[in-house]
Image (cartoon, rainbow, N blue to C red; front, top):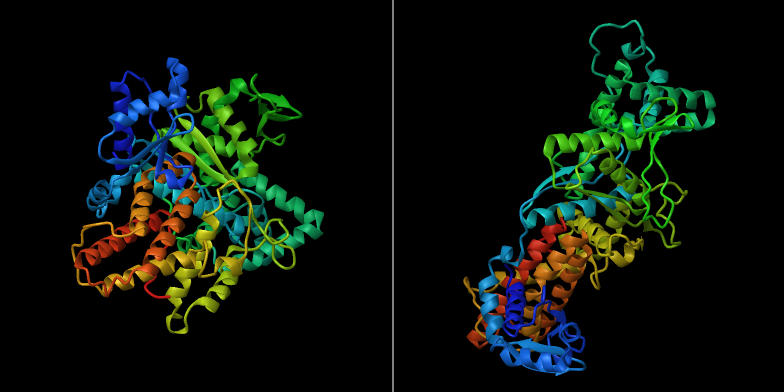
Length: 571
């Protein structure tokens, strides 16, 4: 249990001793900082429940609080404002300085599957894939921090129109491949394609299909044949997917995103028949397609039926997501499954989840959660595009940002590894800072700045801390005193960390952590600017300063790990 939770439980016990029943006591930030560091707002609620004056209740509680609480005052209709004693803050700091895990208010262990990534096989990742990767990875690490068993799945988009496109292009370029010979009986050979081939072939096939209805119809038919289980096309497509996976992984590796499972829509197809058997009594025909009603009486807006099988007998996204759910429940029996996709897919996931519960495909005790995110926009407020109006590839966005980073990094530190880490940190921090549901404008110049809420500012703060620590000779520094307000303010902020972590976990929102990282770095830089740590003559002050740097560094280091951002040694 975290220290701040211990304090909240202590106040709850005080209330119980005064015969006031309350579920939870919550320390809020004091609305007027001059009145205190924290505020308690329960008096008004209890006054209504017990028919008493809220100020009287507040005064009763204040009279019982121990010496850890100082500068206590009752304001307005019963707000209790207070500070924590320096003695308490010093004791807390020395206990927590080397134990980040004490900041976690653990829950009962669960198995949680995290579905994020969603890259399309054999196609380049675009800017939209960045958000799912960054937000999903941070949440995966956060869930692990809370002690749960996590299974992450990239869930590739490896079944669909791109399959038909590439195979149709292969028919043109290599028509003699045995995959296209209906009479071929032997085992299929390995195809000879490179990543450059895939990068060249897809745009070529797409252009050809747009200009020729005959070619587009061929693409549709190949795609449908794979869905129906055509052996030759399916084997050919599986090989193409296998060629593209390392290329996709390479980009995810750059973003420090890793996955336990590299499954996709193609792998779910083996479970479609079992899924349909479970759902068959709930399906009905509509315009030739099989659908399921998912509306509920409490709906305030129209929720349309979910299409499960198209009129031509082939599957759709919903079919394959339902089959994937069947597989996940069968193989892993998870307590929860979290999905991270574009917010615009919220209605679709609501349909899939309702269909899963209605048919018994998923037990009601298994929580299915969709966490949507907004779009990355250009200066015009529209989704970020290339200059010619196309969807921007993620690699192009990284290159664009890297050019801005190079303008800021000192020439002597301009090595490839450092520049790469700063670039990715810049990208990830700017992406994680807004609350995930919010659209934001991508501004390379602003995000690469060494000032303000940016990745480079956070990295530079850490470089500064490590530089000072290297110059000190105090190995096991402890907090001895609090000799200025900057130290006190930092310790109070550090005390609040468990609340930030819990809130981030509950809301699946790493933006809270990104904000906190900036606040902590800012307070540290204020302390650094006003304190000559290296030349401090008072040994007691110097040791406390070194302990503070170690404490702040430990927290920043662990929080950046959650955000999947690497540190650098120089900038």
